[in-house]
Image 1 (cartoon, helix red, strand yellow):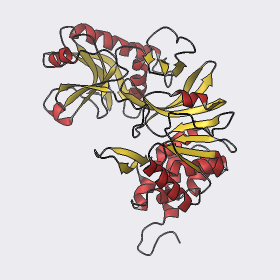
Image 2 (cartoon, helix red, strand yellow; image 1 turned 90 degrees about the vertical axis):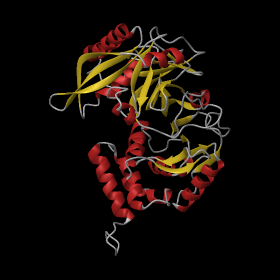
Image 3 (cartoon, one colour; image 1 turned 180 degrees about the vertical axis):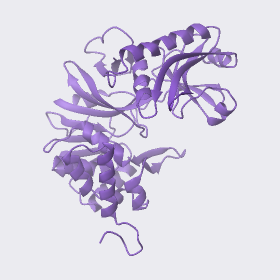
Image 4 (cartoon, helix red, strand yellow; image 1 turned 120 degrees about the vertical axis):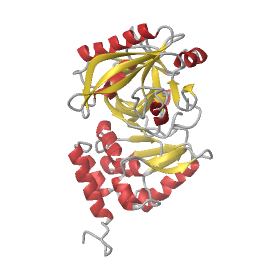
Length: 403
């Protein structure tokens, strides 16, 4: 029987539909991940939500909020779970550490590895680990190891060789030493990492004395808690409506830039176009983070756009650069044949020069990197060696370069 008496699809039918859709979208590409998705009863890990929403969720389902109403735990959307599992390249027999517990991803990992006891999931919040333990038990995954611990600290009972995979499911602002130290020599680290105001889930593998990315996924996660949490600085250029997001303690003169934003603006168009489904802008955003400094995100409300305070700025923001008294940011305008042209809007005494410089870097990307695939992010420990020359992103524990 495929449907209930009321005509509502059963969880088995919803699960099969989900897997078919994920296969068609390219989120699931391997038999092991497909089998895990068909086996895990996803709806049991978000019992407060109708099964139709759980299996069809385009975004994560929040399961806990803090006292300020900010989400601190969630069940990720199926497409993101799938893409992360594929990027992690988990195989039977591997040991896996998951940082950030929800239950569902740990169950999927247990299926892919073939051994529940090889999966350890940890969280700093006792409510979250208690919920994960309860739901995993009820779903038939009682041997998955659940630990209440700060994910940025070493795990006392980690395998001597290290974990084959470390998969982080909370947004991180740095790469704590524990993740690198507890990673097997041939292991892979998957982490939603924030840098320069961007957030990308990055799959890292070891390359000599550093980590090298081979997959970048545009995604959002609830922020990591504990001593390693580090929020970016926000400069309010026009109250709540226009904000400059600055990471990594980059120098920024908030008062001077706020004053500059109230003055005249200069527009410069690059001739660089992108299509609806090309996926160019996410790659450009990351590439720019390794090509210019300082670099951050300009974010604006729809009200700001309606009032003409900003150009066309997407909901998640657009790349921005600045100096001591001027700032510039990328914008878009409609071009023929359902395409969009990238341009620059700049404010401040040096607006024309700053706009020209940023437009020139965008044109260089178009010439040199547009067809090169995802940019490569490398992570170096500060104590191990100096990163190559060029723009670097200094975190407390690691130095990032992007090429």
